[in-house]
Image (cartoon, rainbow over all chains, first blue to last red; front, side, top):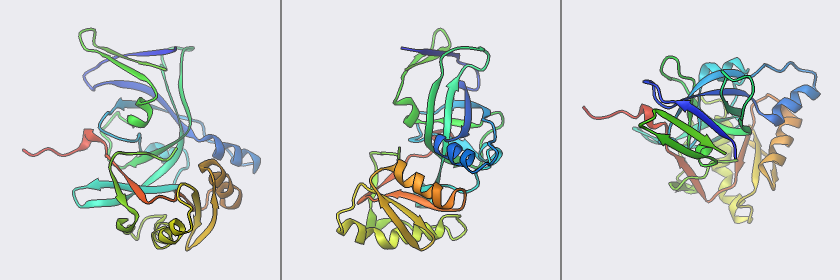
Length: 147
Length: 100
């Protein structure tokens, strides 16, 4: 079993994330001779209050993702409303380490977030967390993902 | 692939799309057709929708996605599982407003 460890900092349970085009789209673009934009390094916050992972609009735009691929519903203060879903690849890793374990999702449906806080690009939701063992070690001020 | 949640709503209660949404036409097509698709026994399969047309129904998300990429690549189109109960996603808890 592989393990990623991160310190718990004042901003919360923050980890390094790479967001890129999903596998099927990448293959389709390559086969039609189109350019592939490289994955975007991001800061992700562990968010057990979100069913799905959310990615900030600027990150999606940097990948050329303008059109969502699916919709479902979510609840807001105005009731149940449709919400857009985009398909991306998501890797959780330690950007400080040149080599090391990487939690890989080549095709993941994510919600778009228009209003993220500064220095935060991704909210890692339960769709990702439920594939791992998440250990929060409060006294040591660190957390780990085993997968 | 498609999110599964404990909270759902029946297909008959699907809310209308925001008209400014890029997939508004596709969502309205799904809302209009989902009852018929369910009646035809297609629950659990995946619809490929372009504008006001159901282009095809596929057994897997990947097959529908590939068909969409082959025909439309980056043009707007929608893949949707045919469901009698639609998931209702919990949004990001970090940004939920609190009473003060």
